[in-house]
Length: 120
Image (cartoon, rainbow, N blue to C red; front, side, top):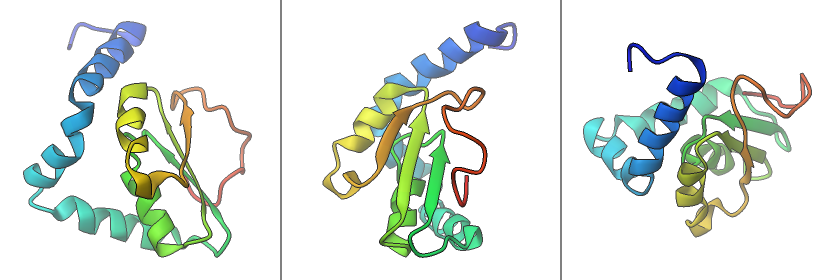
């Protein structure tokens, strides 16, 4: 991967995450010994999202941060964006994530105007 540049590197990353999409959450939980859960709670608390606010979880993967946002702020408008569609498909299959709006998006070219969200 060290010799890959630009679009080649992006495609490599997409293929890598597409290949582990259905196992990603379990692997993350095991490799971090559950610390990923605490980290997400902390991130959302630090965002200080207002009631009825909005969150863009970019590089959302399976939507774990967006889901934590909805847990802490039930009337949140949560948008999960990722350029690896397979990761979002894996997350979208879970019933508790139905309220997340899923968007295919590249971090380098977001399809949103500036200041659309309370937190990114």
